[in-house]
Length: 314
Image 1 (cartoon, rainbow, N blue to C red):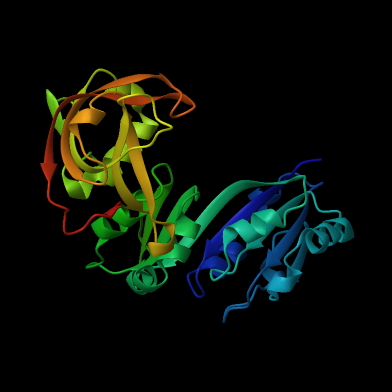
Image 2: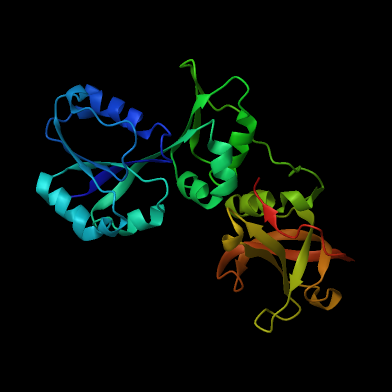
């Protein structure tokens, strides 16, 4: 039997336990009287769950605050012990989600993922623990910023979230209790309808991701951007790859992200920075091993190495 997992993530004192308490007090969450709910907390905060406030139903709570106990054997044993039909997890914000998923018994799957952030401390976490912020935001279905003041920079929060997660809903909870869903428009910083789509250096990461997600929208379009040239004997004759390094969250994850150009290798030099104008044709290519955006060079001009070679989403 498949076991749905309701996953709540976020850093300490971000509001996870409060939300969990409210969930367990909601009788509508226990419509099916046959449900046996296993609640696992992977950290202990200042706020504790109050079982006296739970709605009627079979609810079993466990705490695992030792990373060595995060394994399939432990989780499977808890499921068997309580004959759980669903699981709610309040996860430790300092632990990586890949370790949690790797420890899931085979029949467990994430049904819903919600991430909580304290607006008053979020910018500090994002500046100093960016890898952990990205880890929690990337696949979240809902991102909740609580304790928002009237002067909280919601546009900055929106931009940071959308840099790693385009589909999740964003919710802002004010200190006065008012709640609002994010309605900030998220237009691309370049005009995809222009005769030549011009990509600024600072927008390459957004262009590369949007091209990857919406290739057909770019099919037949002409694009102009600056990147560094990579050549290899393994590429088709007279072809090359052009792109630039992209950083998603931290220095450790910087990776070169390039596009294959099927002609013009004799007109550009390896490891040089080039401003390229090319037509995009979406087609099957051995370079990608599947269908992908293949460039056809129109014009190229060698450029000096930019001050900031690495592109980011924020």
